[in-house]
Length: 315
Image (cartoon, rainbow, N blue to C red; front, top):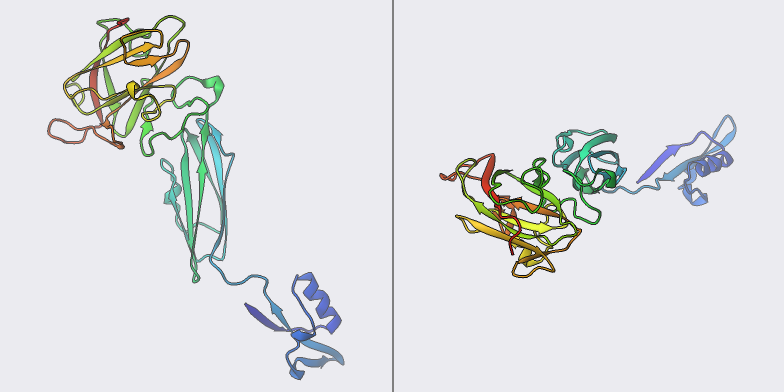
């Protein structure tokens, strides 16, 4: 972009001004004799200033501070935009980020109660083209609050199933059944909300921990629907554990088996003195993001349920 302005300056002053503005200036900037004149007897020149900025697509700076945050914490999103005609926000699930319309060239947005990894995107346009910037805001565990809902052990994926959230309750095995591994006859109704999974944490302890849980359908909340169980050291993990620790019971009823590595005759071998999560979700094993919670007429429900019946120590 070239800007030509009549400078009411001496040649020397013009050179100083150009230097101050960070603009190149030399004798080549004088195009013709018409550019030389006088004001009150003082020679003047026409200066041809060449802008250091070429016309281009919008420039966006988008940051999150702090990043990552402690689970349940907050972060400030800050943006600065240059050379844009219009901008829009997208992503930011569970927040009002995408509802921001006509954002100013500079602004801030506070993200609160961050329990899992979230993406925030800003897109701006001008006559030249379009620019998109995305910031990924992470969440890490606060060891002092471990274990509990929304607290991921260090090294665990804080967004294990994009689009599916961790259900707040129940969050511990002992909060639902008798302390791990439970006792025969202690059957409980277990409900899992649509678009959520539950994770029940428990500690195996130093003793041999082996047993099984029987699952049975009921008509309390949706009756029998597809569901998946896993035993993992990370909440919401239905992928990285050994295949023997991932269960998809039959449509009518099913058994989950567990044992530590010193036990025989069981399927899922658990380590002693280790914290595990019993994860449960209503979904197809090959499509975790498509949670299935419907009644017998295939109408959507807010929750689905089943009966869990621990069998206690059982080799």
